[in-house]
Image (tube, rainbow, N blue to C red; front, side):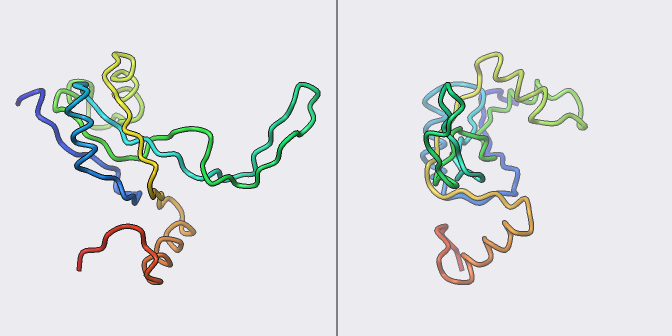
Length: 142
C-alpha cells in the first residue's frame, strides 16, 4: 500500500456544501498526512462580552458564526494514517487524530459555506424542512 495514496473519509452525520475538488487540491498542495474540513457553525447560545469589572458590554443572541472552527467531519487522508490506528476499537478523534496533530501532519481546510450536523431529531427535522421546502443549499441529484 502506497502511504501517499489519498482517500476521502467522512462521519456521514453531517451535510455541507464543501467543494470536494478544492478540498482535494488543498490536501495535495500542503503535503501533510491528513486534512480536516474546518467549519464555523452558528453559535448555539447568546454570546456575552464581559469587561474587567464583570459588566456585560455586548450581548449577541445566537451569532451567525461561532467563535471557533470545529471538525466538520469531512477528511482527506493519506493511507499512512493507518499506522496511527492500533486496533479496531480505537476512536479516530482520540489517539490517532491527536497524534497526527502532534506530529504536525494535520491541515485544516476552512469551509465557510453551508454545514449542518444531524446529531439530534431537531437537526434532522431542520434538514428535512430545507429539502422539502426547496430551500436546500446542497445540490440534489435526481
